[in-house]
Length: 483
Ligand code: DQQ
Image (tube, rainbow, N blue to C red; front, side):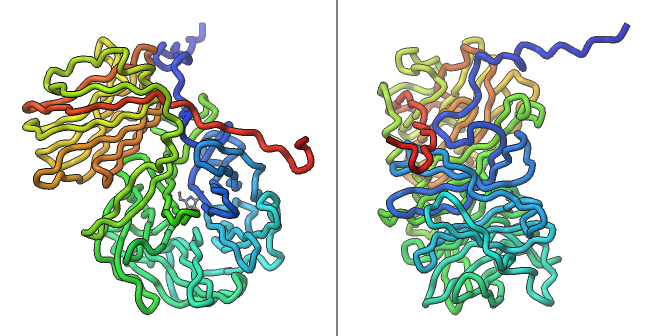
């Protein structure tokens, strides 16, 4: 007799608990990774992204495309770029950017095996024609031993296109290589804009993004092997960038971030939020990867970045509940009428002066405590923490804690702004530290919220809770079909 395969436990198969995010952008099915070609054009936010339409785990890369006027109502447009057999992008259209050159919308992206840079243009932002002269940058600079050569980031300056390529110099560290061009097709290598140090900032800088903010410039990079987005703020002079301050954009599941300048002059940032469960679970779900919420960036006096969710997201708010003045030490479950559905919520928690070593909230709590996720400030260690040891009874979900350096200043109190979106959680602490994490609670009753305090008391001075409705996703009407 053959042994039957082990029956998956009920936690794995509990399909009644929705894990798929609804307030974060995702393709209808299969795979998403990096945001690409973020551009505000003719009153619309265009978000392209690395799309793997063949399976829910990586696969050949296409460019998917979303568009919106208000950041909450989105249309999923047809695939913008597909790999073409026999061409430089035969093995995938990898990450890149969008610009408008002499009135023509243009995508610049990486073809792989080998890594080369390609262009595609459009008249209507819908159908894209690849440049007959692709690749427009066919090889890394002579004499430079690079560890990567991809993810073009262009901008215009003094009548010339400037472009960074995500790279690294062998045995030295990650690097952003600077090119210039009069026309986007003829490129001249200048020099590295900035070079890191492999021990501290990784060996390859993927997805560089470079832009002015306040009176400084900001360089974002996603270094291998760090798996986080680092930012540097500093001075850009003589076509070289000198970092003066640095930080981490997000302490959790957030990578390959890119930004755009919108019509209001805001610098908006999106990142790729990857999954936190096994490949098998991804296949079974049939979807993987989401874009983060849009974050508005600004520069703080000390040169670090401030990051806030875009205020347009308030349009997703439905019922509002509020409570005030609760002692977190009691760790009692909050009443159901406050918590609502417990799964797709926006929470704003303000704490007073606290003695506790750790304090914050426990979310997605089951009544018996078998599932819960702790989101808190560790005042002793000066860290923002997401503890996932009991987030999910599903053995395929990751359980390790995620955290990063974050310290309240003297006299400053803790303010947590949290977005719960089924398996995806985004935390903003005091408008300057972010932690995005994936949790996969299996129990239908894992929707409670408790206050969290350890090693002393902490007063929650106010908690505002909104139930969030899903983003509105519209189907694309091909031109001529409407009416
Ligand atoms: N993902 C892309 C690359 C990029 C990496 C491929 C970062 O272009 O370097 O999908 O996640």
